[in-house]
Length: 104
Image (cartoon, rainbow, N blue to C red; front, side, top):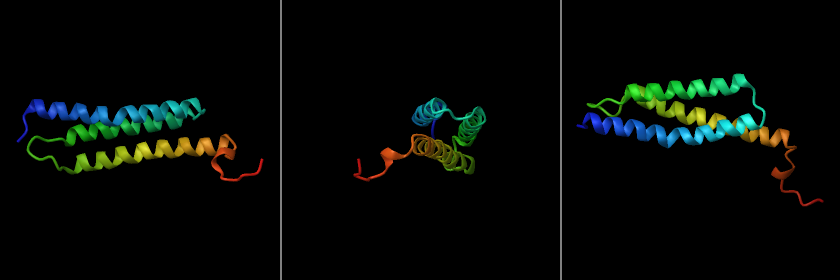
């Protein structure tokens, strides 16, 4: 059984492991001209997932449904932000650098 200090440390460490990459993706989306609605939606989704994750992190059991939902939700929100960023890069940059053609 984990102590309260160990649980608090693990909760903070999990946040530090996931959120910086997401913030970098959010910055890239904003620099590429993503709308404020998209940015707010992704940001609120990530915040919601992180709050659920902390609520599901119990001292007596580490494998809880809220923690699992929040873990997959965090992954989904991060992959969605990365996918949108890649799509914007491919569409708005013309996509020329994404092809393997050798014509000049």
